Length: 555
Image (cartoon, rainbow, N blue to C red):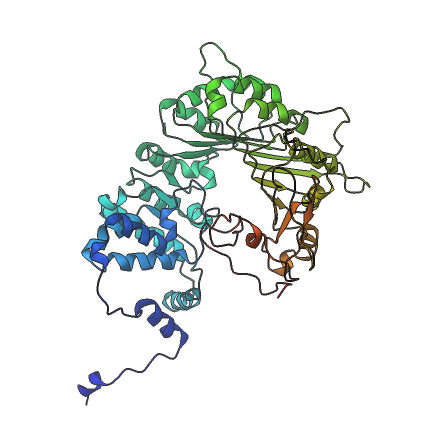
């Protein structure tokens, strides 16, 4: 009887744990012809990147800032199964498995409950097993036993608590990864903490291809050590609250020929002299991205001096200015006028007084495509908030036609899209006459109030050459005002969409739907970016649509 029991039909699992496990490890079987041998390695690699999207992540962002949709741990498990299917797939899948490694604290799916119960049963003394620490130990054992796999690793991203508590294990892991370009490091690594001394020595000696490094208060000695030739392939450097001489800063930058992005934050000693030329000291490098945060002693004159160099002027693509007292809105036009290749400008300021009544030249740039213009009023009890004058200045710059390439605009004023409808009308011009200057490009406006969490999207569509466009009637228009006021995060958190079109006289008006029901901007846009008639939200990943909210007011 015991022998015949083996031939009995097994019962289907009834509990949740067994059912989920069967669904994960025993998928449906395809019995058709096998066409995979005709796929070359390039196509297989693209398919496997869709199976496990985070393996294609080559950004220098930390684990907390580089999330992906879905469960990254399950995606890596599926990719590991693909590597074992056939010999043709192993080389491609294994190359992705160990290129960009991400260790997460939990499963972002319902399997986490199952594995959590298993870990509790297997743990000794009633203590939970630390899953990310266990995975880091397994990775450390793998790379130290197989140096071929260790040489494939280029990105290693870890949870915050894991990299803070497992400094010794992290040091043993990176010591055998010579091609590592980015790794999540504990905070003590950047401020000169003695507990990270061994880890710092291993990264300096073994990982010469590091591309991003940060230096905060207490890390002055580590920053000066770059003069000894460490990490000459650095691309991104963040400097925050450290105290160094400007001459040492310039000499360190002279040792980094690949430097493209620099962030300065909370540096009271930094002023315009950092950008000045001096004999015997390397010039300030030509950067692709320059970020300034709470650097009050840098003025527009210093940036103008930096942009006078033709190489710097042609290289700089992005400028970020946040809470810098020496760079008010009145000085932005001078900086934009010299930055002839700028593509993105991020400006954030907290103001307590309105702009002066003296005329200010409009913001002008022929290359600017993305403008993040966030003005926050410090005085909230005034009848006329001071931020209104700053947004009026932006409106005048748009209507003057001085930003012809602008396509995306972010503002911290939920009424700004409607302010375009109140712009002064422009008289139609006669046939044969030159067209008047005005707002003449399609613009995506993302607005958000101070008490809101999500951006409200509005697409502004320009008129034709003569300012004429057929008007629509009937139905209820979609205005950004009602979207931001009535459809905030409590209605699902998705960015609301509406459309504004010219009224034929230089202004704009909200467009109602043909059937009496408002529609999103994606259905009215002549050329949606994703090609399927729906404009994707800026928060979502490219090529992936976010499911609509169940609390949609229009359903």
